[in-house]
Image 1 (spheres, rainbow, N blue to C red):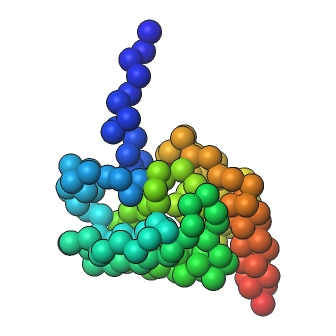
Image 2: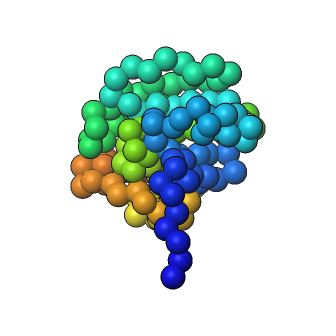
Image 3: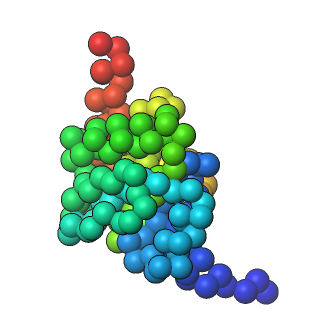
Length: 156
């Protein structure tokens, strides 16, 4: 029988070579590991304001209530920031309370915008790196709206 993985091993997950998703409850050990992995951008979807972590070149706070979706404007801002980070060869840590809903929603929106995939495909791309995610219906609806918005602006 396989041994269960200790919970701390899933505090953050690599989604792409440049994008990590995780919890805001990362202890200093995890933060040190993220720095060693080259993470220099922090995108927080925590409801309450967090201080900019030391050693981060980019910090974006997108205040989003737990169990809800970021607004369309917040998704736009997050996707623009994440795109800039990736285009500049940097690595980003995207996080919320547990790294299961809000942060994966933003990264899925990034895939919708940059890979031109449908919302369900974008969520599956995130799940490959972080299987424990579970977006709520409101978060999936926000991704559907974001996909329509993105397609409309691509045609314009």
